[in-house]
View 1: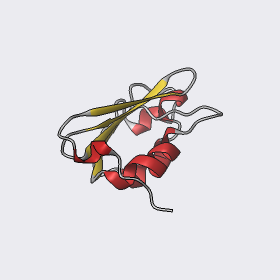
View 2 (view 1 turned 135 degrees about the vertical axis):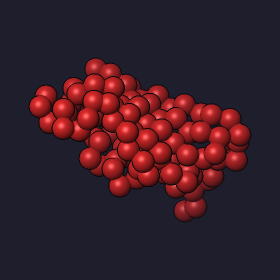
View 3 (view 1 turned 60 degrees about the vertical axis):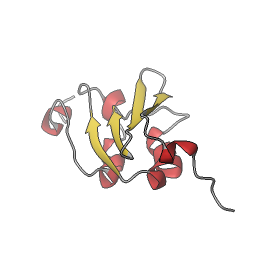
Length: 102
C-alpha cells in the first residue's frame, strides 16, 4: 500500500505538531525549507512522539536540525537517544552531561 504524501510537504508555511505526553508535551516544528526542530521528546505509556515522527514525518522532511531539551527532567528527554540518528545538528540546553544527573 502506498503512503499518501501530506499536503504540507510542498508548502512554504511552518507547521507545528504538538504531542500530548501526559505530564508534558513534545513539539515537532516543520519549517518551510522542509527541515524540522523538536522541542522536548518525552513519551507516555500510550504514545511515542519518536515513533510517530519516524512513521509519519521523517520521510517527508530533509533533516531534523535541532533537538531542544528544555530542562533535565526525564519526561522532557526520555526519547532523545532514539531520536539522535534522525538529527543533523544537536543543541541541548542544559548539556547532556547535566541530564545524566537527574
